[in-house]
Image 1 (spheres, rainbow, N blue to C red):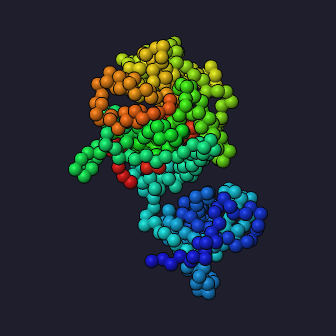
Image 2 (image 1 turned 30 degrees about the vertical axis):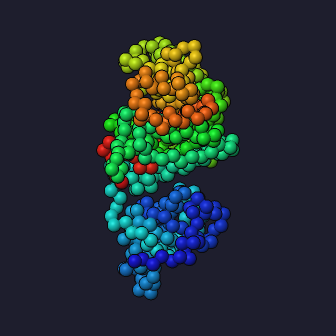
Length: 455
Ligand code: AMO
């Protein structure tokens, strides 16, 4: 066991907090060794912590040097730096030097003492250019990349901004169970779990329970929590477990009220990311976090199909729903004509929406629902829900659904419920598109897919 000096630990300064004005003062920094440059006369370490990197320097004292015998501590320090493996966590005390020639912020720490806090047994098995799969195998090391660190800071700010909007508007945060007696969306993409002497299902969405909060009289609720889908696909935007951002509110007149709320929530999230990290994101990820001035554009699904068809692409899906290529083309068109990265696609055909979506009074073939697309990809589905029990039962029956299995859900509507609506949104998808990442693997802390259950 290595004994770590607790005084050193508590006096640790995060690298980004190192004062850029005091020359010669003693500081303690702690982090992991990114690189070691072990030259004959001088040794350099690049040390990284959760906030940044700093150069550490040590004038080497080798066995063959004249005064080596007289200074055993300096010799031991030199030897221990020579023996450092990349990735090792160290605590270093030293004098802070201001030196304009040093690339990393013009700061350098002259090492007085170095403690090994957590030794890496070998050099890191991955590099920046390793394949995504290999990086995911070693995700805890992959996450040491400053870009990865920044992605999760951005996610934190985004969630904080959204939550701030909801809390500021007096919404209630709920945590709904993920173990369920019946499927939460449909029988598709359902994970079954042994549950004592019966079978449970993992929640595909908090849909049923966030709706339950409406007859519970909660008024408006939100949840940010895991959802599970037994989706066998290997795309850049699907996971078998993902964080779903959900909202549901009473007293909506139509899906337009839900869209207005979602737009406000997204603006609050983006504003938080921009204010806290906009500059770092531009510098490190080369993306500008922009908050559109104009209201999010809206097109009906019928208009969207026309726009896509006008670009020379015929949607191959028999049900007429937008496929990923159609989504990309629609977004490019909207971006070109309005400069807007978002677009709401509204009024989906009843045939391609769940039974719980409310239909238009004057046109039963269309639902009061929408999808929200961002930079070419769907990030969200929302709708006004059908709250009239007779209509709801009729719509479920039309689908051939098992009314007994829906029993608990249907009960929610038998004891008084206000009109309501809401949306569900995949957090990692939004972050992927916001930060221009190639896959949700990069914006999920630990990705879960058909062939990935570790680490
Ligand atoms: P939907 O099934 O469209 O709607 O899901 C909502 C959003 O969740 C994200 N998402 C996923 N993200 C990663 N991997 C997946 N496998 C995955 N599946 C979905 C997407 C998607 O837009 N209950 C409704 C929402 C509602 O009406 O309130 C629902 O779940 O970003």
